[in-house]
Length: 103
Image (tube, rainbow, N blue to C red; front, side, top):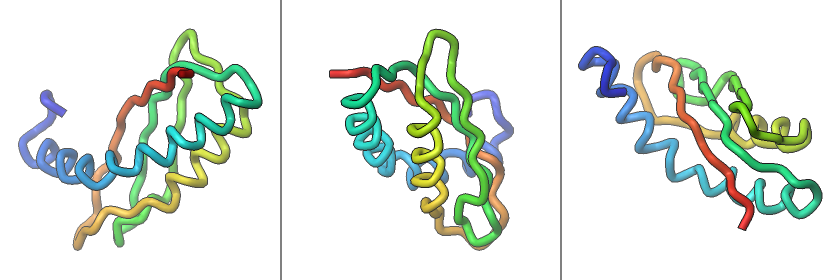
């Protein structure tokens, strides 16, 4: 975000304020799935938005040294596709990394 143009940086910060509160949904999913399989690590996620601010598509990439089941990834994408950012214009794609550690 810091290296982006000012307008893009502002859009990313606005998106972040609506997206970050939803991270708990992903952590809850991880808690459920990690009871079944030993999953762990970091995931790079890019969200693509429709004009109304709903998540249209999700690109999810495991980072090196991570392991996640297909079931976890599919369910995580389903959760994120329900997210929405209030907007009156087309939003840029938004990328973030999230780390999951078994407690």
